[in-house]
Structures are given as structure tokens and as C-alpha cells.
Length: 277
Ligand SMILES: C[S@@+](CC[C@H](N)C(=O)[O-])C[C@H]1O[C@@H](n2cnc3c(N)ncnc32)[C@H](O)[C@@H]1O
View (cartoon, rainbow, N blue to C red):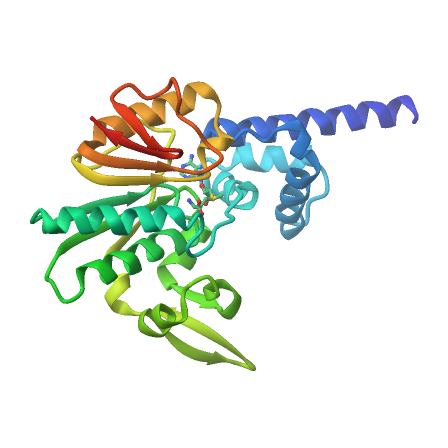
């Protein structure tokens, strides 16, 4: 490589590092070196849309955009949004059983928070399970579902899923809580209004404490997002969750995550499930 080409390539590497850092500062998501090619591909897709091929040009565009819109598009482009209905299904068995117990004790008002709800499969699964427990009983239930990514929130609010997406939903529940529509030569499944009404979708960045959320929550589900955060940030999230959950309420995290040594007033009842003491 000629000296000029080497200099140009170094300047591109530096610009890419700055872009990664901007994402981390904004979201807490650490875009690690070992995920380099995936991250590069996602950033490249966004740059392609803008007709850009050099990182330093893209960096300037982000920094010049004082509205913050391009940074939001970048965050949307690089965040991992993998999710599914009934993901880590043991959690939903647990939820069904504890809500049943609470109902038996006369509880008639419930507050839940799905704290990184992606395209909505997690809060809708929760809503299905709650409806199944509540039956015809009139219950005051609210599920807050938040995510930093605007695109996934729009999809979640639409509540329309492909045939493959709804496969993990047991067939009787699929028939009950989705209406099947034809879309060309395929079918798609729209969540029924009864479920949609239970959920409030909002954009929210988990790295900005104190969270402006009404305390005394019965349960927070924050799964598969803390893995992208460093220890300090995980500690901060855990402290906020502890503050917001009522005594006897639960925090559910992803199966691959742990809060050992991080939570103070919560006890682990099962791997990935904590109760506030
Ligand atoms: C892998 S998905 C997990 C979805 C769902 N909780 C599950 O387990 O199936 C991670 C989600 O966290 C969101 N996220 C990442 N950083 C965030 C932040 N700082 N604040 C809020 N949400 C964030 C991403 O946009 C993404 O939708």
C-alpha cells in the first residue's frame, strides 16, 4: 500500500472508531471489535442509503446534524433486535403461575414493564399470558413497552407479524389473539385490539437515570439487552429496577445474563428471575 493509501485507510479506521464510540455514548451498546464485520455491514447499509462510501464523510454528517436524527438512524441500524414470541418460554410459565397466585390473593391491578421490547413479541406474549389468567375478570392492567430503536417501536405498534413469526404461539392462542389476513400469496397475523389496548409503547433510553416511571411495578422484564452494556451501566440499570419494583415484585433478565453481586435488595429465586425483598 502506498503511504498516501495507508494514511487514508488509517483515517477511515479512526472515523469508524468514532462512530462506534458515538453509538456507545448514546446507547451504552458496546460494539466490540470481534463483532467488527457485522457492525461494519450494518453501518455500511445506512451509508449506502445516503450514497456514502467513506466513514469520515459519514461521521461529519452525523456530527453536523444537530437535530440528532442521523444518530437515531445509526442507532436503529446497529442495534440487535432479535426477539420472538415465547422466547425463553420458562419465563412465561413463571409469569402465569405468579400472576395466578396474586389473583388468588385478591390482587386486581397490575403494572408491568418490558424494558427493551424490540418489535413487540415480548410484551404481546406477556399480554396473551395475562389475558389467559384473567379470563373474563375485569382487571386493571398496564404494560409499558419501551425501546431506544424507533423502527422497532413502529413495527411493534402495528402489531402485524408473518406466519413464521407467530409459529411459537400455540395454535389455540394464535387463533384467539391474532386475526389472519392475506398479504399477496402469504398470510400475516394482526394482534387483536384487546391485546393492543393493554400495552403502551414508548421510546426510552435505558442509560438515562432516573427513569421517569411510576414506581411500585409488579414486574420488569429486561432481557437480552444488558449483555451489550458494561458492568457500570448494568449496575445503574439494576439500581433503577430495584427502586421501581415493589416489594414482592419480580425482575426477569435474559437466561444468558446475571446480576450476581450487582443487585442489593433482590434475591435470585431461579436463574434469571429476581424478587424484590
Ligand atoms: C436483543 S433485543 C431483546 C428484545 C427482547 N427483550 C427479547 O429478549 O426478546 C435488544 C433490544 O434492546 C434495545 N436497546 C439497546 N440499547 C438500548 C438502550 N440504551 N435503551 C433501550 N433499549 C435499548 C435494542 O434496540 C433491541 O431492540
